[in-house]
Amino acid sequence: NENGCHCDWDAKSVIFVVRVSVHKDIRTLLIIWEIVHRKYPDWQLQIYGGYGDEQAELLPIIKKMEANISVNEPTSDIMDRYADNSILIMTSVFEPFGLVLPEAMSCGLPVIAFDCPYGPTDIISDGVDGFLIKKRDVQLFADKLCNLMENRQLRQIMGEAGILSSRRYEAKRIMPMWKHLFEDICN
Image (cartoon, rainbow, N blue to C red; front, side, top):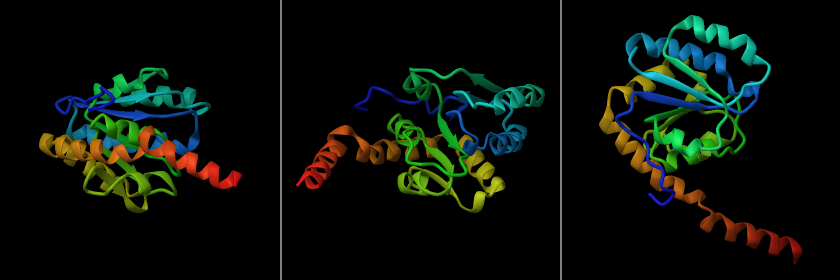
């Protein structure tokens, strides 16, 4: 695709990208991963980024889980990390419009997120380029993740749809809108 990033739909690896914030709900992520890992112990969860005050508390829990989870420092080459994975998940309680979802989708990653206030519901077309999980249903989230893990063709179909839908957020489309807005404000 245009940004040069393309995920590996054959990779048995799921990525979770987190900024320092409690609203990302890493505790729920770990509950979901525990369910999924029982069924797919050969799959890996890659966590990228810092998660603030919770980090010291959660690292020993993650290590004790022995659930094939890799915790990685924040990285400036996140697009390359997307390329190493085949699914992106997001467990946020609320999510202002973040770049993680459209960035990952632009690399062909199908995405799964809770239908929380703001971001995900505006970005994900449920069942087309990813899954939007209603009512913070942890079991449904795990089921949809398992569905993607066991179905490479579905990962590819949703990933290709994600590449197309992420184009809505390309600079060449967004910048003219900003320019028009500022011109309207100035006039």
